Amino acid sequence: MKCNLCPRKCNTDRNVKTGVCGVGDTLKIARAAPHFWEEPCISGYGGSGTVFFSGCNLKCVFCQNHEISSGCFGKEITVGRLKEIYAELIDSGVHNINLVTPSHYAHKIIESLNEPLPVPVVWNSGGYDSTETLRQLEGKVSIYLPDLKYMSEETAKRYSLAPDYPAVAKAALIEMYRQVGPVKLDSDGIMEKGMIIRHLMLPGETENTLDVIDFVSSQFGDNVIFSLMSQFTPNHQCNIPELSRTITEEEYNRAVDYMYLCGMENAYIQDFSSAKKEYTPPFDLSGV
Image (cartoon, rainbow, N blue to C red; front, side, top):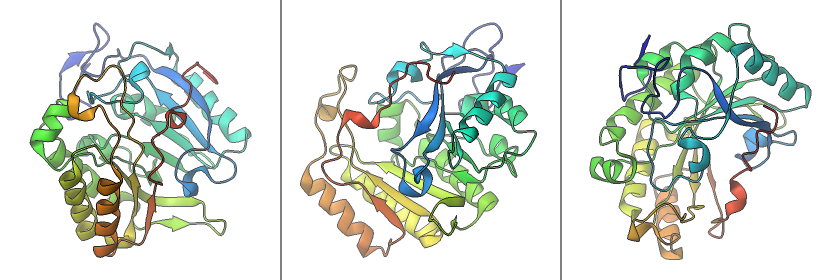
C-alpha cells in the first residue's frame, strides 16, 4: 500500500523503501518508559507511559530528538509487541499511554488500539497531521498533545521544509478539539480528556509566537491548555546562525505578557531557565 497517512502524501510504498518520514512500514520504536517531564497533568505522580516512535514527517532543523527522528535509530517490532508494551507500562502505574511522534504509524497504532485501554491514550504529535487520518482515531484517543510550531509559511519552510504547516496544523487542531472537547481533569488533577497545545519559542521568532497565541486564544479560549515552552537548546547538527542561541529574557517576557493580555490563564509556562538537555530522554531501547 502506498502511504498517504500524513500531509506529505509522498505516495511511497513503505514495504519497498522508506517514506519522507525516514522509516518503512514496520513499527520502529526507540524507547518505552514512564516519563516525568511532560506537563504536570500528563506526568502526574506515576509518570506518562511514553512510547517514542522512530522517524518523523517533519524535518525540523533544530530537532532535539534528531537521533530518532531521522529514522536511523530504533528497534522494529510487531503490533502484538506494541500491545504488550502498553500493558507493561500500565502495570508500572503510569497515568496514560503517550504516543510520541506517531503520525506516520497511524495505521499500525489504530490496529493496536482495537481493544480499549484502561488509561487515556495521548496523541503527542508535531501538529502536522492529516485530518483524514485523525478522523480514524476518533474514540481511540482521549488526549491530544500537538505542537503548534508556526503561523508563518516562510518560517515553516525554512525550519521544517513544510510551507503548508500553518494551514495543516490549524485544521488538525480544530479536528482534534472536535473529537475530545474541553479539558477534563480527575480529582487529582490528572488529565482524562481534552487537548494541550504546545508551542516551543524559537530565538528571533517572537512575532511567530504571538501569532500562535492569537490563534489559540481566539479559536479555543480556555477550553484547552496552552503550554509555552522556553527550552529551545541549540544542537550541533543545526548550522542556521540565528538558531545558535537560546531565547532571550526579553523574548520570553514579551510572550508571557502577551499571553496574559489575551486572557490565557489555562496555561503552563516553562521557567526562563528551562533550556536544558535533561528534557531529552535517553534513547536506549528501554522497554522495547
